[in-house]
Length: 68
Image 1: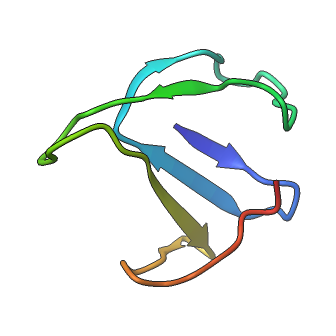
Image 2 (image 1 turned 60 degrees about the horizontal axis):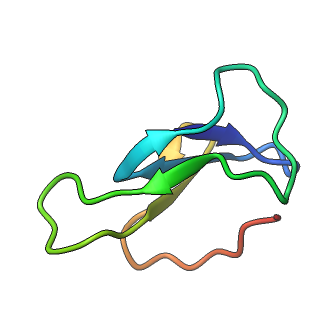
Image 3 (image 1 turned 180 degrees about the vertical axis):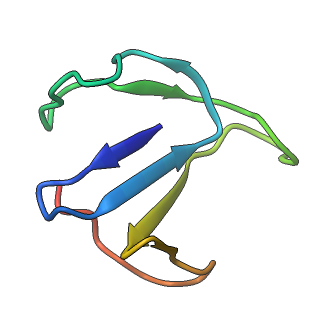
């Protein structure tokens, strides 16, 4: 799931089991947008969040604080 944040940066959420919002819907801070899942090579449910700036994905280990 890909979000355009209020800071105009893209946030990619991965390893989800289901989606609660559709493309183009506005999302508010209290909204449930998806459910955490156990997809890919993992040993349990987790959420992967990646920040995309100027079409460049952040590397594993980069630290950022989402604006929401």
